[in-house]
Image (cartoon, rainbow, N blue to C red; front, side):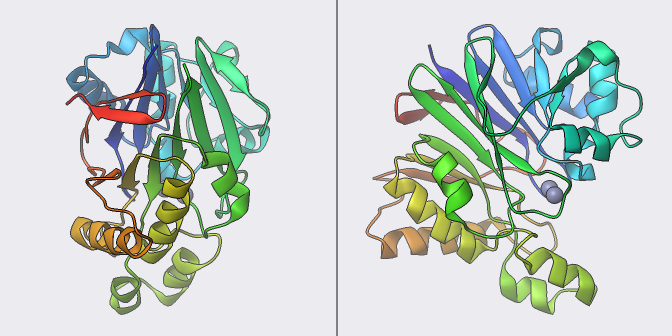
Length: 273
Ligand SMILES: [Zn+2]
Ligand SMILES: [Zn+2]
C-alpha cells in the first residue's frame, strides 16, 4: 500500500499537510481556515467527510487556526499531547470530548494502516512535536518549527524516504529586516526556527540516512525567498557530493495551496500531480 502525502499550506502564515494510506486520511495541523483546507483537499481528490483526524504539532496560531471549526464541522478527532491540549484550550473553541485524542510522544500509535510516531523538537511552544508516518515500508516525516539541528530529532526522521523540512529564514534578510529585535532573537534562537543554512545541514544528514525527496517548507514570508532556500540547500547537498535532481529530489513547498501529491513506496517518491 502506498503512503500518499500533499503539503496543502506551508509557511509562517499557515500550515496544513495531508497524509493518507488506503481509506485512511489525516491532516497534520490546520493553521488556515476550514474553507481553504477543504478547497485544497478537493484539488488532491480527498473528500472532507472521509478525513479520520487532524494531528497537532503545537499550539501556535499558524498551526491551529482552523482546527476548532474543522473538528466541529466534520466531527473530526484531534490528536495532541496533554501539554499541547492544555496550551490550545481557549484558542480553538469547544471540541467535543469524544474527539479529543491524547497520545504519548515516542510511543507509536496507529490510525488505520498508518503507523505514527510523534517526536520532540526544540521550539518555543508547550510541547512541540514532529511526526513520522509509516506504511508498507515507506516513511514520510514532517519536521518544521525547529530551533536547531540536533541528533535527537534527526534520528527520528532518519530512514524517511521523504521529509517536509523547515527552511524558515535567510539570516541576512532576518537581521536587516523590519522585525523588532526581540522577535529576531526569538526566531534565530535554538528554540525558534531553522535558517536556510540549518536546513542545508539537516538535508545532507537526512539524504545520507535514506531521504530521496526533501521538500523545504515553513518559509518566512518576510525573511526568506523560495529561490534562496532552494539555492542554499542545493549548495550544501552538492558540497556533500549529492546531486539534487539526480540522486534525490528537492523542491520548495507552496505557501498558499497544494505543492504536489506524492506517492511514497519503500524509499522512493513519485510526484503524482
Ligand atoms: Zn511555531
Ligand atoms: Zn509555525
